[in-house]
Length: 413
View (cartoon, rainbow, N blue to C red):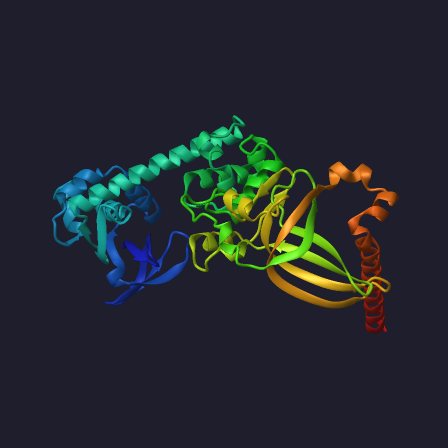
């Protein structure tokens, strides 16, 4: 006797060789013999051969009209033989029975499995929603295939992919058809997605990729500041003491955000006070305020060739920039230096206001900075001090390198 049964989640056929009331030994078409429980057997028959039986059952299954089968099915739980008889009539054959369970089992959207050989049809509204979802998925798959064909065969980029090219690489939605199409096309062309997007012009060049990916990663909400941020109140710091030092800044002509300055003040007894003055916009920022949260999120102004994205909005930058002729709130570090030895005798840090005498632009004064000019200039004192600081730094670096080489030598030996 031949059997149609389920084993390890798959439908199989074979010939019974021996058995008991609860199980039997079955020889598969491959010649392999296995033990099958009687409860796993769905159909018994004499002919055709097991291999032919399964092939014909599978072919018959594909011809069963799912809509009609679902209509014939009762609302309650049913056995596959019952619905097979409803569909094919009383003269049903073993092949048709096997075909019915194959059709039921392979369409879980229409029929829910409730046990071995038992099913229940999906409610009408649930089925409608499921079929609509399948149709949407089918259309998306067709759209994805069209994108892949366009990328590979036409060497063009679909607008839907071009519009989010950087986003697809930086933070891709791997469930989107754009990502799936890009990934599939890249795999078929054996190249990276970035290389493919560059080749088809979705990303114009490497520079655009580096810049736009940087901003998308570091400014996920965009480079622009939120609207209606708090406005700065520079005059609120008029109570700070006014320094007697006269400060100047040194920057190039493109610098619009002047945040540091210097001062040199001669003192009695052969001493000079050198001041370093840093703009203090933090004085106007209340902890937890909207501008505080923006500044904390950005943390820094971003500088790149031809690009600058400020940490603070333009009105805040302008309010606290150390511009020529203004009296500005600053954090000042003063160092009193011996004129002869150039040794630092004392230091002092203050929160104060200071007059910005001049904004020097080194690209405009480069031809004026001569040996003679330096000797006459206020910052004459800074020149030898800067040279001394450089020598100390170089000596420290050399000692560090020697120490590192000695350490490696000891480890080697």
